[in-house]
Image (cartoon, rainbow, N blue to C red; front, side, top):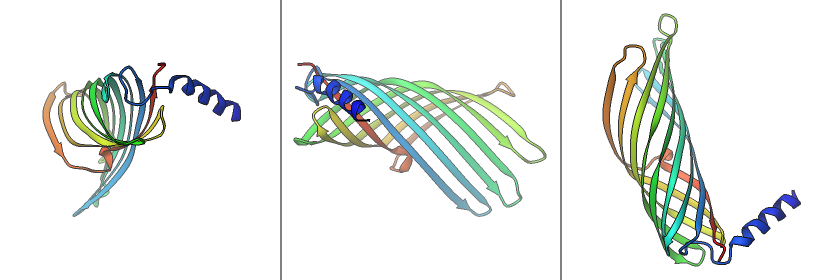
Length: 211
């Protein structure tokens, strides 16, 4: 364990001379969200579990201005239960990729506020199990376009390391869903302006610069 720690210390120490948000710095990041919700309404109970991981990389094209590419890997499971003992379970998986731009606003040496715009395009797949009289499986696949505004804070314990807390209070999605069984498709536009646990991410950032 000590040898592993020493390796990473030497590796990042090589890049840390003028790291953080200066022009020419390379940005590597991983953001994670794990959330669950439960809603009870009359004779229905809905429970959902969500997981999302967003690796990203980019380059500071000028001081405090970051341009990069982000991938969003997400999975969700929704279980709807009814008093009539009927139950519906839906499993969805989604992969999105696209560019982002971010602007940092330093507050002090080790703390910065940021705001950014993300856009992504990708695919999703869903499976729904419905246990009415037996089990009915419904499959669907989709094409998605998604864009959102990111805001947050980054704390820098080291010049090359940032711990980030971010949220996406405003988002827009355009979804096309195709049913595998009956070969039909539906499209929808979704605007969201709110904050909930599924829109808050915790991330680790690395800022690398050999100057």
